[in-house]
Amino acid sequence: MLEHLRQEYTNLIREFSDDSSEKVLYKASKLSKGFVEQGLGPEDIVDIHMRSVELVTGENPPLKGPQIILNSFSLLLESMMAYGLAYREYMESKNIRFSDLEAYTHELETLNTALRQRINELSVLYDLTQVVNSSLDLQTTLRVIAEKLMEVTEYDTCNLYLADSETKEFQIQLSMGVNAEAYQAYGFDSGHGLVKAAIEKGTPLVFPDVKVEPRWQPIKGINDHVQSWMSVPLIADGKPIGIITLSSSEPKAISEEMLKLTSITASQAASAIERARLYEETKRLSITDEKTGLYNFGHFRFLLDTEIKRAKRYKRPLSLFMIDVDDFKIYNDRCGHVDGDHALEALGRTIKQSVRDVDFPARYGGDEFAVILPETDEIEARTAAERLRACIEQCKVPNQGVLPGGKLTVSIGMSSYPASADTEEELIRKADAALYRAKRKGKNRVSMCSREKDGK
Image (tube, rainbow, N blue to C red; front, side, top):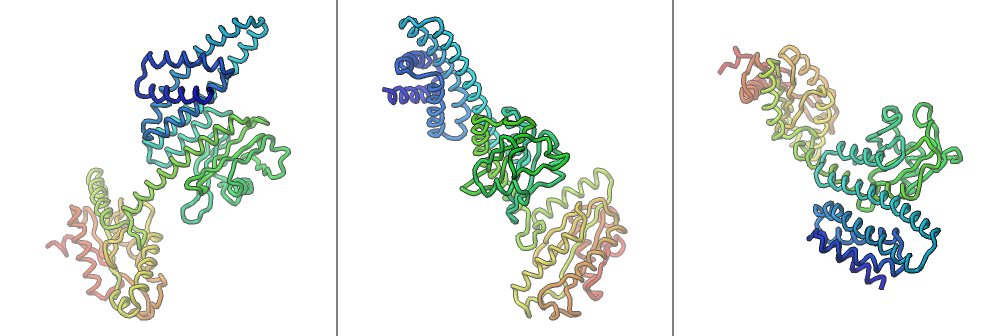
């Protein structure tokens, strides 16, 4: 009979998700009488409701899930109201004493507490589902996760750690609450004892009272106010991708309900974070040259167009370098393309490390590179080009002795707006002309283009 009631309630959730009518609500109220007759309490009904919502949500597309959850509140409230009436009639029919009525009232209060907790859980799940379906920005995703946890728990500080895709080390990505700036400045990572323990454990780690926990490591001005602490791993595809830690200045602030809610949140958060990271990585790969790690040709043209428009708008200078590796054909012919690829990789790293953070280095094609230098006139650009040329000359590559001079060198051609060019195409053409002039004059040098020399 009990299983039959559960099945009927699940069918009502399905029906109500498609037809939110009074007819379905009436069916729910009638079903509540059966709950009373089976001796089910309010918490049992809430449990049946949560299981039914989870089942029906799993049967539908992800985008429909939040609406099913929200609609189900009305059905649950109708069931609980009808349950209350049926329960009262049942109690009166059994001539229960007044003290039993008080017990019933207390039971309803317990139900209200449980219901508020469930509503909090559903609210968190709904908001996180919205993030999963709408936000592809990693920082926005992390901030929403932390904000929702701080709303529904009694914690003072929330920290989020993510594993670096290359080093696999866990680094703090976001801190919210008490001493948030201090946590980020200190730079907790997977080398810290508690973070390391949480990663290794792979399941929630809880310290109800840190004073009696020998593994707790207080740090003055950062976490010395903490009395209770917990961590919950973020698991995606069976692998830990991050950790959520929550701390409170009150001892024994951790309840089973809070741990359960944080674990539910962590499950949803892991999916949202992975989706955002996958998007960012896809976006990065779409604009990056795989071999050198610099911007690719397509993004270089986009950046140059954007920067020259900005330079014209604000009447600011802009410079461009065109760079060609000297005698690279000789190197490839004698050392092979494997060493050639390694040389290009080393050259890409050197260029990236030698220019400013505001500059845009790119692989133009083959053994040609380019650098866009915003807010840089031709005098400043000449100094930067000479510095770059000298840095590349010091770059070590495999078997560089086969090159004339025994080292890798480049020739650099320069052009500047507005000194020598007015348009994107003219900047490229003038820098290219200056590059070939540098080649003709003996290579391993910088040549600057001007209107007078390259007017044609």
